[in-house]
Image (cartoon, rainbow, N blue to C red; front, side, top):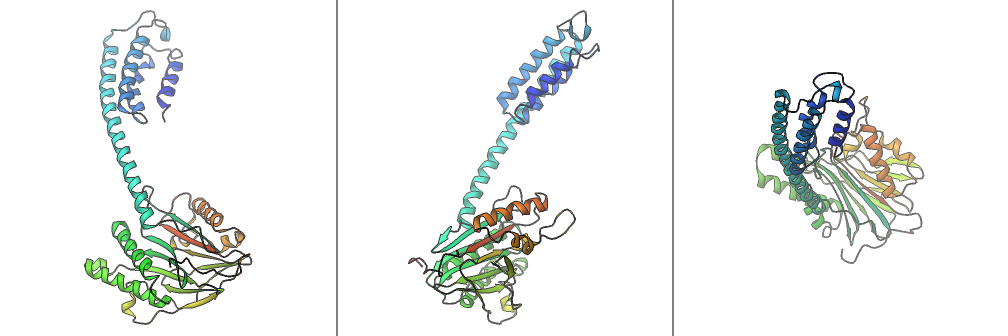
Length: 366
């Protein structure tokens, strides 16, 4: 785009001597300031305007252009072209100043959004003891950085505790709900002795927040989530599912959903059922990998409307470590959807390398 004005003038200079008409194509120089305004600032556009007027005068005063025997430097048609170019130049300068201001504002907003994302969805540690971890977040909105999808990994004295969640709805309210949920999880993960108690405490925090905010729409807002725990010195993973897509365990070239069919209601809806949370326990041996994800992945569609075949894709990537796995998933999702995601996407991959004998104790800070 920055070279567009130069290419525009070059094309005009090639056409000018080859055009056998009385009125040369140099009149199209009137649009040159607007062409420059697409990619340059107001100072460059003002200079381009002066250049365009001078170039129009040079072409108008050159008799040889387009077979003319005399120049038309001060012909009324050319004088009108000079005036029009100047007016368009003023307009282009104003537009360039406005565009530059908007770009700076957008850059500031993106910077603030990046900071907010680091606070809300801070990158998970790449390693906790012998566990390897990686995270992925993709926003469906081109200019957005954060949304209602969330993830977290916390080392505690009970083991490494994981969370993946998806807030119903969009916008700032969804972001606020995600922030409240993450804050409650990060605090309670260190205190509660088991996953049902952890889920119940987070549920209580979400209920309290909904009551404080008030309003029918907020009262109906809920969050689907999966709480997982990989305990120290035990080859297993415990899962509490609250209406969320089940985690996937990758083992020996196979990808299997860890779904017992006993999912609890989403958070903020548990009071409607009143039943305790159920814990499902699955083996998690060295060499296994666990993928937690939001439904934005499985609900991604191709051009024909077919849903993304996650398990089929994962079977081809079973040998990849977490970072390469999520990178491959990212690129494949973008290619599958034609770079048009319809929903936010979050994923958390956890691997216990084959050489690790067991899950190590968590950090003493936990």
